Amino acid sequence: MHTPAYYIKTVTIVVLTFFQTYLLSWLILDYVSKGNFFSFDTFFALLVIFLMVLISWTFSISVGAWGNGMQYLVVPVPTGMAMFMVLAPQNLTYAVITSAAVIVMLMYDVWKSTKLRDLLIKFEPTIILKFSTNGLLFLFSVFAGVLVMVNTGKTHELNLGKQTADLVGSALDSAIQTQIKNTLQGTPQGYLSQVDPSVVNMLEQFGLPTDLNDPAFTNPQNLGIDTKEIVESQVNALIEPYKNFIKPVMALLLFGIFQFYAYIAYLIFSLTVNGIYWIAKKINFLRTEIIQVDKEILKF
Image (cartoon, rainbow, N blue to C red):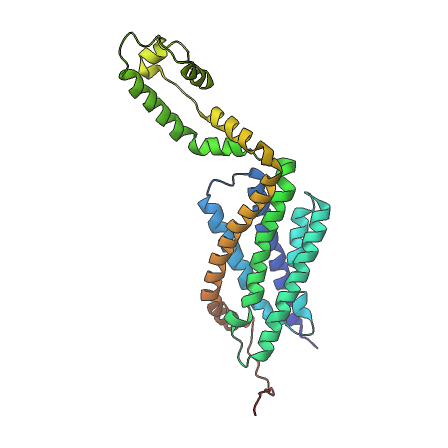
């Protein structure tokens, strides 16, 4: 029979797991909805890593509730339910499938950790919790990929041409203006009226006058070329035949990004988890219990 303190601590772990997972899942949803996959937000990255570490710490102290199958419920269920709450407004079918898969996969990872715990004489968290913690963080990367598949086509039409133009437009614009200025300044007088047809096409494409005697050319300061629209249209035209592959590729990209965050989070977790256990024991949230065991060995 468990004490009231056991149930209070178990409920605390469940509540913390749910709200931490919900917050991280909501942040991922907000990031995917904006669609700014090609821009790096330092604050967002640090916040994601911090929440991943926090969730890992909470999971690590849930070992106090392990026993009688409770380990298969205390973290997997609130994690799956939190992801369901975030994903359900986007797509109910995806939400049901994803949350069910998350719960089952976490249960399996916890089962592996439980078997490792039973094999070791001393509780070593970096060994026992390695599979389950990595599995938990891996699922957030999968969740990010699922959100891309569900969300981009519904609330944000991904425009790779525009994002590419935003990245390279200014640099390309400056390079083109510099090149045109240098070319015009080195052109002898009297030759400005002799325009090759290919040059005319290029000028029209950039929205420039086709008369090289125009003041925009005779005075380089009047040049004002905006290449972003051109880059956007050209990139979108280039990827149009492959448009159906954009979301899967973006899902894989985001999966990789969050796996990188998860790797950093797990590294921090592995370096700090022993300190978390020390604090938990100091405040009597966890206690050490010594039991007698029979160890099996093989001999000739």
